[in-house]
Length: 328
Ligand code: UDP
Ligand code: MG
Image 1: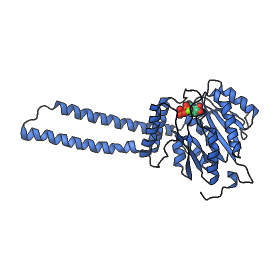
Image 2: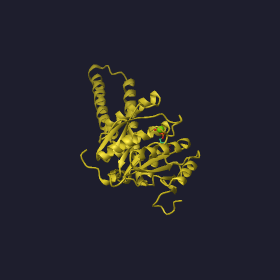
Image 3: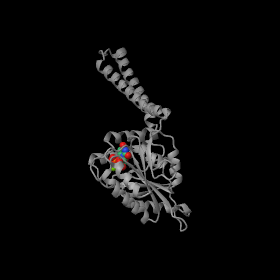
Image 4: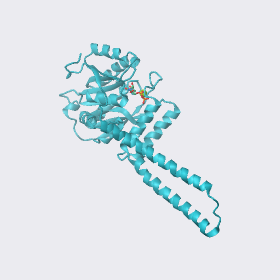
């Protein structure tokens, strides 16, 4: 884009500060090498950095590793949540504590390559406000890869604001965008969707998705399924409106069946007690009703969550946050 980068994007007079948000749930082995690689990558790109580790209720000693790192380096900040609140909540917690001119969100399992941050920064300095990674070369199993592929395509057909395919959390947002995203009141959060929804100048950068350093994903398949539901139900009302279509189709089927039965009843005398048609029709309409109620339930649950408005996460302890009087 043509806009000249402002001083906050790292002109000759001022170095930009880049916050990197890293949600951590039992990633003990990855924390240290990742911190080093990320810091190196941002520094090489000519910017200052702060790392914001969000300890999402780890039980494997990750907390100690992060605290030790923070004790030796004040730019490493750690937010300890009171329990495991989930990946999306951890990202929100990190965003809410970021001070940078730009905020990078990435996984802490080595799947997102720290070296790509330099390319994000380049695009940001060109004037883009959102730079997201388009993931290529996924290393997951073939069925999982297929599910991801299908998910992004289905999602794109359902949502009102088109979403880029294969773009997950990994990416950079300008401070302005970070402020907008973190103040969105959605309880049911799908970060990639919210980042897309806010608009601004967005661009995708192809990034190879690495393998996990260990082979045990912390987000379970059920967790991914829930996230997919969040993405669909909080960004699309199509599942609800599709019942107009199903209702209309059911009506056509019903009218057809009624005409057929009445015709034989009144004119041909071939109307045998219609066990088959009755069974089929009732089970069909029964299934449609149940499906409709289930879809309604998805939205009602979300309304319930939103109305209760509990906080998304609670913080137990903050380490190295400059604006926090109780930080150790
Ligand atoms: N994570 C988290 N809380 C959770 C589950 C995961 O903070 O309840 C973190 C995890 O440590 C990792 C990131 O979220 O840094 C992505 O998790 P994972 O690699 O399991 O997700 P996938 O790559 O399979 O989507
Ligand atoms: Mg991962």
